[in-house]
Image (cartoon, rainbow, N blue to C red; front, side, top):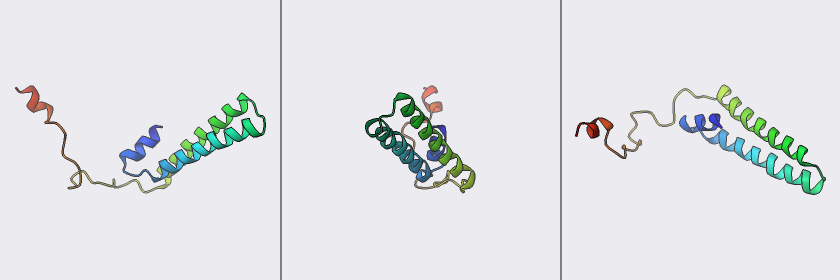
Length: 95
């Protein structure tokens, strides 16, 4: 999950969202098919859930290693960055 948040912080969420979708498909769809249709037990369901997390982490790690993570989507001095919601702490503690 930390790699998912790293993608958010870098302003690139395409791969993390794809990884989450793959994880959902493996865990929910294949898990349901295994239990309801093929009569698999709880052990098989847990192995499918574990495999979904491995796929999730692998997709995001590959995106981090192979992708362009040099420049963030919104630069620090960009005009599109929202203003702080509260005054800086230095002005509050000086009162």
